[in-house]
Length: 361
Ligand SMILES: Nc1ncnc2c1ncn2[C@@H]1O[C@H](COP(=O)(O)OP(=O)(O)OP(=O)(O)O)[C@@H](O)[C@H]1O
Image (cartoon, rainbow, N blue to C red; front, top):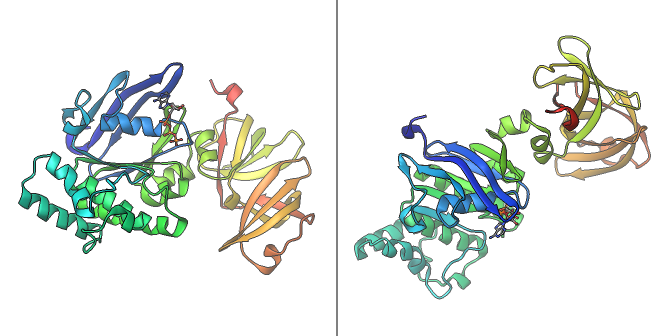
């Protein structure tokens, strides 16, 4: 890919701390203007990777390119990247305006440039009129807007966000997600955001890189990641899947069967071609299962109405715990624990099948 189409290119980034491979040979390319989420569980190396890109952490090996420029050896201040952290990290004794102006002055902007850019940024984050306040006189969401304005003031080549909304409560967080996206789209700035929140990544990113143990497990659009996970880690990290072990057998062109060790038969359609009969693991998402007149017998453990859906947990006779999400209804919402039901895979659901780890070589 030529650099015209690549904003950031990471090649074989390796960072070790003693025995820990915090980042284990990561390659990643982003397109100009793209919003990429680095998503993964705690300790998977997200922040370390972001710090390598910003220049705060030196990688043991590997290269970082910004467009055509190899910035691997450049210190952070020469990379012109904007960073926003979870803790807003505003200077508490400086006004909002002075906070935003800080980076501009450090980059040698004139007084007029500082004044006009600061005003422009206050407008972009919809904080005009707040310029003379101190950070402690602002709400959490407002402080985060100022932190964003400060990062954007230097017209960065890349915007790096480390859990930027992590400290906000749920409602404000959702509001700030759309606000952040609006600003990102308006400025067309290539953005990398670290998050451990699947829903946030799905709601905001053009593409998501799912990380585990310092490596990228899958890089793709939210629907590729959710609907066609390439491995069991991505499948289980992106949703509350139940994974069942069994023997796979082909019924016809569309239908497959997984027979569990207890002899229970799950019929399903697969996302892609199932290449072989034999041992397999079937991942079932809550929305791929339903209660029906026919199917696997099970006992209800709980039914909890949650907004638009009801979450149901059942246990099959052979002991498998299944999670279902069903549209709400009087019968479903008040289903008593202990009731006997039947569960099946929804006829049109496309499920993922994985090779058991012992056979996956
Ligand atoms: N300065 C350091 N010294 C030693 N080990 C470190 C250092 N920084 C990170 N690590 C280790 O590297 C691994 C990756 O850490 P990192 O902070 O990048 O993970 P993360 O995915 O951002 O986690 P979280 O979501 O909890 O912030 C972890 O095992 C961590 O303990």
